[in-house]
Length: 236
Length: 253
Image (cartoon, rainbow over all chains, first blue to last red; front, side, top):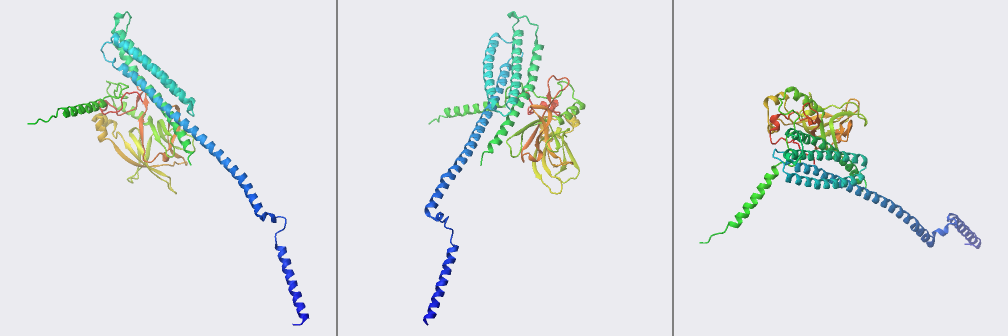
């Protein structure tokens, strides 16, 4: 190859090389953001993300979790109190049955002695005392029901009916005592017919008592069922 | 000759037997809290006529009660008085319910069957058929008690045990769950604490499957009896004299 041809060949190669260099330098990223590619900047960006975003997510999640747990505990506590109220109310209803049992033995025709009468009065006082304590327990727990006003009214109606029932029971025994012991100086024009009437009244009043009892139980159980449904919403 | 001493063992055995027997006997006694006398809507010592029974039976249809009605997907159990059935549109109850089950027997008999509430002891929802082009329907198993006509009750004078044995019948009925005007069949009644209006107790299809819904007897006022009495129309003297008659005067607890 002659020297002129060699020169031409070399110039061509150099030109081609420059073109290639020019082409690659245009495709390269701008120099402004090239620092982001560096290892140190990547480390800094990562730390920023984990240092801010992750704690924020954690705090938000804990707040939601705490609120949910708090609500669940409140609902559970309320449910427990409502169930306790129902239990205490059933115990209260046993007092009326106990009262009847105290009087039942006097419902036959045998006369009532002074000793029996005194014993009855003492037992009655004890029973009433327990009944009033139990009343208070039930009424204090009615506040936990959603429809507390209605539950309280129904309980009060039942308690009022119980009071009337106990009055009838005591009247029966006092009447029987007065009939059995006329020499005690108590003037009485009462007789066995009055006792029969009182007995029928006592037996008949059971329907009223039972209906008011059932109304309380129905309302309490309905409210308890609703709160049980609500408590299940907190389960995942 | 040795003599075996069975004295101690036999004494213990006798004591155990006595304790068990006396406990059983005591348990058979009354449950306490009431006189335990049988409850009946008929005036004592007065001859019961067909008209008396008919009148109480009519009251009985409209005076049934329900307690502990279990509904699907909820813990709330429903209580109600004067329960009936009604096709309800939306959630508002208006008008009077009907007090009978109307449907077609499962055996395929095409004639409609009506079972009045006065002869229903209980019912259970066995199945719900949701159909695309026809009205949805439900299969109910209804226990009829007592399945006896008032005139037969008066003439035969059965005891309670005889009624249980011979006059109890189980019937399966397909009942339409949807009414004419797109109403849905509901069990309605008056709440024990809100006795003045009818309210929805449960949609019939929502009652828990295979759970027995027992209908109790509500009260009515009868001339000659001071206090309200349950509408047990079949509680004539031959029935209530039976020891196994369950409706007795006790305090509820």
